Length: 295
Image 1 (cartoon, rainbow, N blue to C red):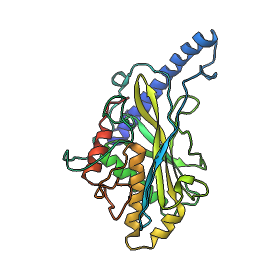
Image 2 (cartoon, one colour; image 1 turned 90 degrees about the vertical axis):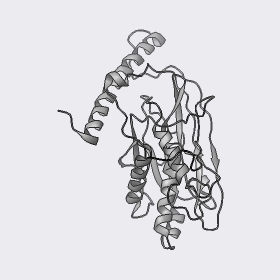
Image 3 (cartoon, one colour; image 1 turned 45 degrees about the vertical axis):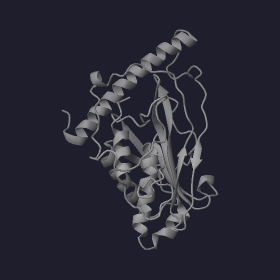
């Protein structure tokens, strides 16, 4: 018997995801048969895909040392998949974003659909899986991540789930695994000698890679990387707890698709000078990211 509430929805999504994966493998087998001949294994190397492009990092500097950066990681282009089967398989949107008043603030998206102002985002009918690398992280790192997850979920209606810890520190080219499934997004703490984009006053970077399916872009996986030394320095400053949480929240907003804005009253301003909560524009942008069509 299926559960009720959140666990029931999760159970139905997992069942639907399994069924969708079986269909995907059957379709992959058909394509491989056509490409390699009858009898090809669904785990054989797939036919060649189109190439991938590079990314862009934007950053600034402020006296307080609380600076955040947007990282758009490598772009992946994949062959079109089958038509969506969500209604037939019972997939459903996880939730609705927070209420907001349109036009009360400023927001920007990291990427939009080709020729449109519609944002690129994560599939609101699928779970965004996250793993955390605890190496060098502050003692309260899991609380910081959990609060950011809860805040982003509440603002977007997306389903973000921390599925465990990892020793993985690979931040480049995160996207799809060899089977074509999204890799978990990675959260970790690092120093600038390991991650060049943390040099100077940059306290964190975040972003996601995108895939194109049937002519539409969507995010597959991403990263949040936070500066170990900056977090240690901020911890004992007045208001340090709120500032550290604001950095993590900011980077998680980049992860799900928000870009920087010029308005310092929004948390997505590139140079944080004291804002510790999402502003009205941030909330409108996050709600729009959670209201896109299921992929």
